[in-house]
Image 1 (cartoon, rainbow, N blue to C red):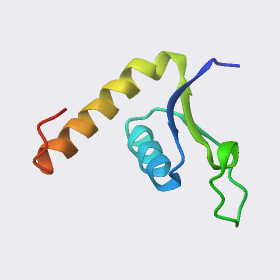
Image 2 (image 1 turned 135 degrees about the vertical axis):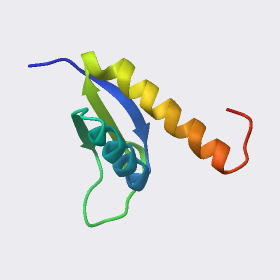
Image 3 (image 1 turned 60 degrees about the vertical axis):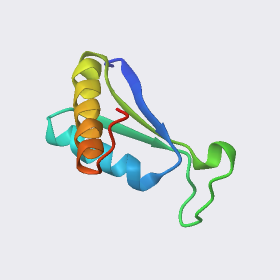
Length: 82
């Protein structure tokens, strides 16, 4: 099996889904590893963790895309701290 590398750790499922969609639109395969128990909105400790993983060979490309997305969002919001 291909080696997978964690690219995002969050407790926000919406953030994870958006990042997943952005990466998949760039033809990067993404695996979501969530410890959430559905349908309960529990975010206590490990039960709230959501991790996104990409193939090792896609890590650099994924990081560039996420940085560009973050920079674009900061510019649109008028933030200059990026």
